[in-house]
Length: 353
Image (tube, rainbow, N blue to C red; front, side):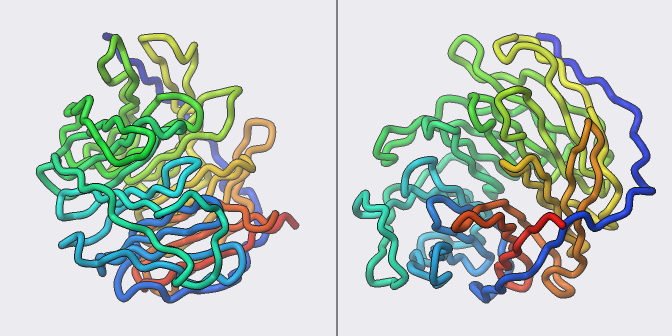
């Protein structure tokens, strides 16, 4: 199978002024005793994972209080990644102890109250297979598949049942030559992206009942820490963040059913970060947010095919590194959520000026 990637000359956006929007800190939640590595939200519930081995569930809709603390004896090491299964109250957590835990609520009610006594999740399964630290877990859009990646250089795809209690590994993907940092699914296709210490991104899809690399994206000049798909049905694009301090946009040209996928590096976004970019998030609003080792939180907007920085805030967790950023909507208000080395989760309001 042939794999294609073309590079495009980087455009110069350095003369663009900002802000065109404002990022305002709404609340800083001191949730953990150590680094916050990952967070994910669904149906007004925020899950967070930390070096302290704790997973906390926060009600974002009203109280912003912790309504559950999952058993911190299940994992022996850092919780590196947490992910909600779409349209359910099922949570996957990947750990540096090489395992993945699956948690579920004891009933199907969506009436989440603000007290811990009213909400309780239980351990449903422990998934084993990786030979080293699990760095990321992610659910497919329909909840059929769970993907995981590891320091063991592999990406695993697990198939699960409706209840989320049984897991079968249907593919072990071992084409990365180094530590795999992150996995993410397309929002409406069974298309998976993995980011690696080998400076590449790989796009995976199913061919004749087997999963294979449909494309290798080359261009970053350092570890690729993260990527995220555009939330659009009209095109297939991916943004990525790297140790080389850049955020890049990759575009797929062709039919999503094509066996041979051709991707191009469509743009390198305006240079904002002075150190590694650890996390990128492509929101349903079309905006991209990035953050990383320099503690800067930036937001980018595309207008007529040109990307500009529209908002930026430095030291958004004080002097600490920021490991993750996510877009969310709470009661109709567009929010950003970040997690940092200070153990805090910060909630930011994004406003167009």
